[in-house]
Length: 139
Image (cartoon, rainbow, N blue to C red):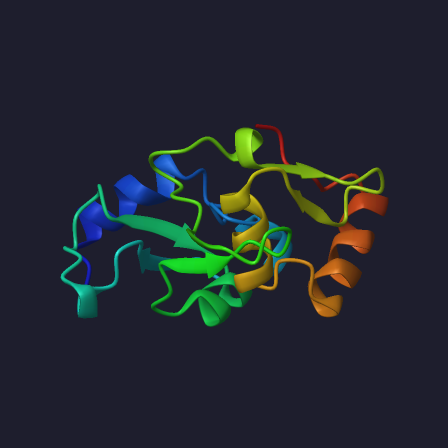
């Protein structure tokens, strides 16, 4: 479904032109962020500001239509991080090198795993961004 320009502009500003999951900025990844339905359209999710968020290509590919994942610490199914209802720093943190995302909660850990937020390609890019002082972005 096409997203009206005014709605896209609103989510671009609200989400600071960065991925709501891994915090990658458009400037760093060199690609326009995708507008993702948090609750997928196939599950009845509407195309509204309350259900749309910006995601990078990598997070979008791995998230797909997922709404749940498995907490690797407990093996229990949990809801993935909801970027509009939850705060990033309550569920995630950066490791000492600022290249790996650490899940702090069941939801955070499941999201890191489901979206493969520390896949080798992204971690390699983050190393370069950190060395250029382009990452991590300010909250």
